[in-house]
Length: 317
Ligand SMILES: [Zn+2]
Image (cartoon, rainbow, N blue to C red; front, side, top):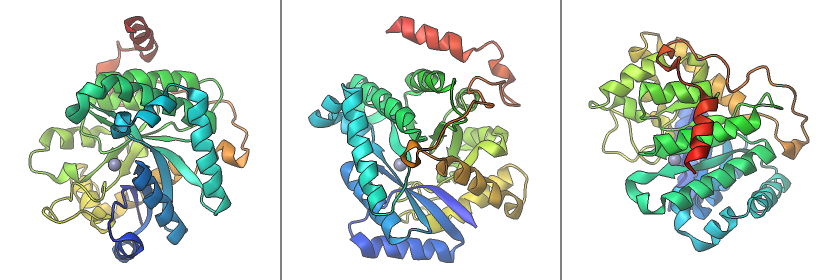
């Protein structure tokens, strides 16, 4: 059984398209998946998929970096209370139709395509991180060409979370960063989501990094409909291609795919089944401080302190 931790049901074929993708995935052994939002239409598709397949599909909703172009959404991002109100009413609406929202996402920064909206993107991300904390939801983070700012905001997030929670803060999805970036995320308690990019011929460095990520922090994802893995290049990606990513990861790590299969699934269930305030849960003390010891293999960061970095970032602003 496999869990695809990042799927966009970005289909123009509506319910038929969702059904076809989910049925094919289940036939390929991908029995669970997270439908990820990011825009009003992706959010609608994610909720629709969770409603159609309540035992197979969970939903995440949020505003991604592209939404920083939208005046109304950037206005809401200026007011944390308005943002909290916006998402909590939508999450309550989902709950009334029997759908638990499992995470806020995807959210994040992308300076590759839209560096000109960088400050609006940062504000949008920061306000949504505050919302996630208030609702005790994990986050799904996208980052591209923005590692330093992403780390700065996630340190701020982990710092704000550290006192009163056993909370798993979230995942950085479709990871393509350096080993150092991975270590910093791991030190903050984040999971790392690996996509079909690890199967690409030119992803040698990423494969070296993928070897070093502790299994208890690994998630796997297709990022459907993008980035189809080898040997499905040239096709529109879909969750039924997840076994090719697992197989590649198993080869990189010198483990059997059968042995590795259950671990990312268990990690995804732990992350996306956390009790949120939507269910009136009481958060307890934190045995896993986000500023715990660095994970094995992260010795390169021994002189790096997330707290110092946090203060440095504050000084910069
Ligand atoms: Zn995505």
